[in-house]
Length: 115
Image 1 (cartoon, helix red, strand yellow):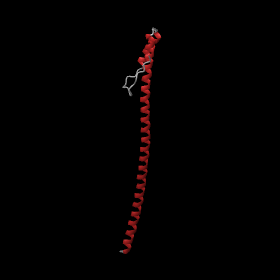
Image 2 (cartoon, one colour; image 1 turned 90 degrees about the vertical axis):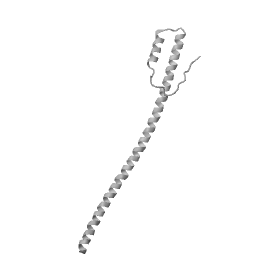
Image 3 (tube, helix red, strand yellow; image 1 turned 30 degrees about the vertical axis):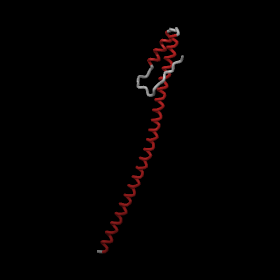
Image 4 (cartoon, one colour; image 1 turned 45 degrees about the horizontal axis):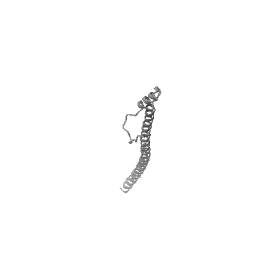
């Protein structure tokens, strides 16, 4: 009876050792997954930051573009009003107005008028 119990104890110890190894392996995998998630989160935050900076830059450039179009229109109108009714001036004016963006203005613009 003692020999049988010792044999059973040895088998149970072997099973415990095997389960312990499996548990440690799973813990390593979980740690690796957590590390990967943290790394991915860091990468995503960096990309989000870059995207936000690019959005701000695009907004600024769109506003600057609209301001330049307004300046060009003003200069063309000024040339036309001085008596230079050339077809060239009119075509520039038509070109400028055809290139105008139709979306909402990202930033308020101040129209520059030279006097």
